[in-house]
Length: 354
Image (cartoon, rainbow, N blue to C red; front, side):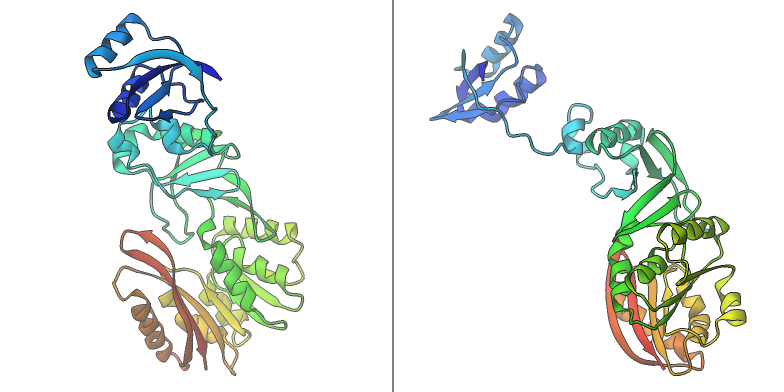
């Protein structure tokens, strides 16, 4: 494509590109060319007299001419591309690297320095990720008996209910009413892949069902008791059981998991899932009570911010089990699941209980 261009010695190239960009003259659709010791910088139009004066002030030697330029190969649009003309360089360096996508909702954590620009950031996310209709900013931690988080709508339609797809399953969820994290996708898959036909599983903190439903979808002969104390989570769990056609294998139970196990599920489980990392240690007695007399497996999740995170979590679990009438026969696995904050991790310990 033919276009006017600025020709400068290569040593002035970076300075020239910055100046041309500042003058809104850079043709971003065409590729800058290096020919011998000079750069040819494509322009969107012939420079005005005032532009020429700035070129003379900055470059001892330059030329303005017209020639053919190759089109720039378009790469996927990134946040920094959309925001480079709207935010200062030090703010661009603070753009969030992690965006959680739950259905057509994007969830981000806005750094303090970007707080005044969160609307601009939200609109940029909508532009880059066309499938997103709402952008939510975390405005609090997951807390309370029902494990919910406060969000602020910073762009889009403002809805918090969506449909999320993961590992062939469909999950209806409202992020303001029930906990759900796409960052646990690998864990959902990892645990489900370990289940053997004929097992009975107790999912102690089931939420909207990502562990329970995937297990039931993957296996023909399983029984899963999915417990949660949050009525809204239970409403979506029941909807998801129906949507994924696993009603014969997943039994939803609303209530406090300790009470439910004591009254209904003593000694029934081959496997117990304890995905309540902030408080799971307080429920070890209930988990051990649910495990069959012959023994079984516990998937125990915890938060930790100590350096030897895995070893510490393993020891805490072993000691807690000792306080019941059970013991840990062997630890099958310990691993970091995800970083939740600087120097803080969610970890998992898989243990065989006897």
